[in-house]
Image 1 (cartoon, rainbow, N blue to C red):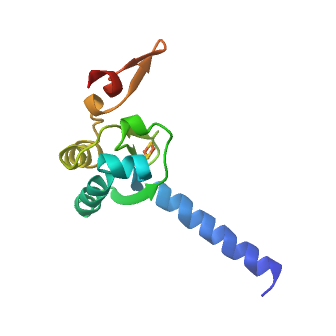
Image 2 (cartoon, helix red, strand yellow; image 1 turned 90 degrees about the vertical axis):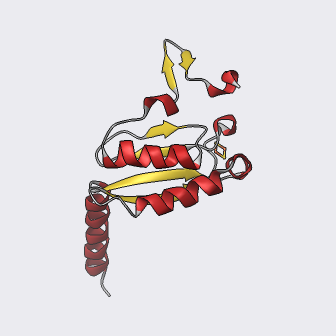
Length: 130
Ligand code: FES
């Protein structure tokens, strides 16, 4: 195989990845020890089951390591095609079902499950509410 052929294959893979990222919602579940201790495995299973209902856009569930804020676990990032990721915190299976229905299927961010920072003050700070 020549260098030119390898370059063309690389280009095709990059183009396919870009097309995919523009048409697929990504649901990223943080699954390090903090997340697992807080129940992230159940949240992941629920996300995988519920994602099968998503057709427009399709949804892909992926797991990742710690985001470094384990006090907010289980933590889930939802990134709709061509949009900024939204962090959902203190997730449960019920909240995951709700987020997939409202955010991924209906396109509405479920603000009450997110973390907000305004003027350096954290709103919806679940760490001080419990
Ligand atoms: S495991 Fe989720 S932030 Fe650490």
